[in-house]
Length: 57
Image (cartoon, rainbow, N blue to C red; front, side, top):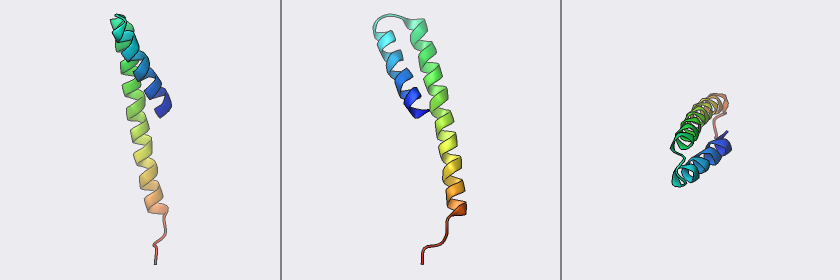
């Protein structure tokens, strides 16, 4: 998912540089949504791993 966010971010930068403003905005919006979904899933998995972990002695 993070890979797709990075790819769409790069595509939006290229489209913006070439003058395709509408397409660049759409790709940037999709990339932002995917990035925040990735962050949410990552945070949930970190919390679950922390709760399931055992103490190191």
